[in-house]
Image (cartoon, rainbow, N blue to C red; front, side, top):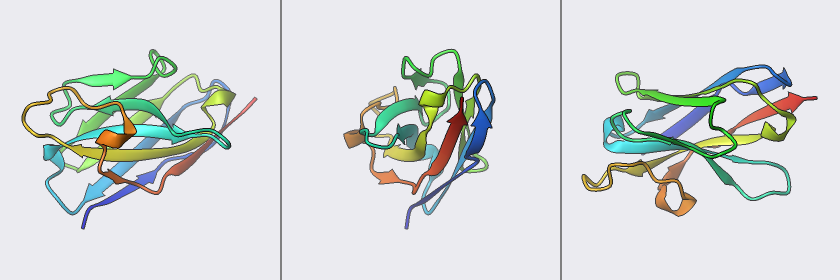
Length: 128
């Protein structure tokens, strides 16, 4: 059974950094695109970043560009989200998700509906 487990969240002051991790188990990790989404209180879940199965292509939400970097280590079945220059508006529960690579769609998806499995999330709180 597929399992995604996020870690690395916490409380940081504005301008600080965090590195989130998402460990996957239960199937061939390198066959999946991976994404990070977040959900703030009272808001809908939104796309943050995605990386394709090989790690070559990354996509970012406008709010994340220049501050966040997503990477993956297929040997460790883990994806990462390095978050720098954090702002109070980055406060949310961050979830990782996976989407099977069908051999056709090279770029990772950016919409929720294209992802099949989700982790429980890790809380990120940025104080002002």
